[in-house]
Amino acid sequence: MLYPKSMMKNLAELKPSIVFVCDDVEKTYETMKADGVTFEGELQKMQWGTFAIFLDEDGNSFLIKG
Image 1 (tube, helix red, strand yellow):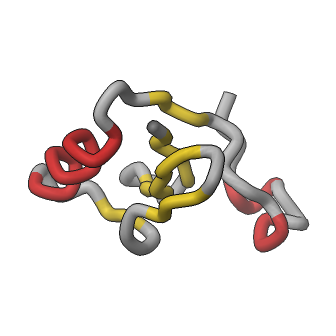
Image 2: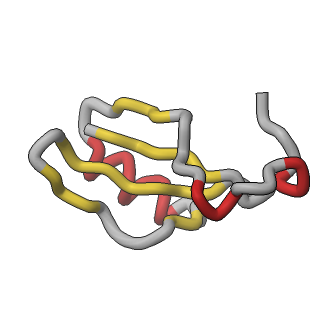
């Protein structure tokens, strides 16, 4: 369930809680970006995997991870 941002007093402290795991996160990122999806920065590579945060049309944050 997605709640309106106005209901979340600690919105600035929250992290995306819905994660989409991708077989090829780099290709998924490039495809989504080409289709006009807004990302909060570029792909980030960490020890546990590669990820990027994207926004839906209402400004909700989600994460893709590979």
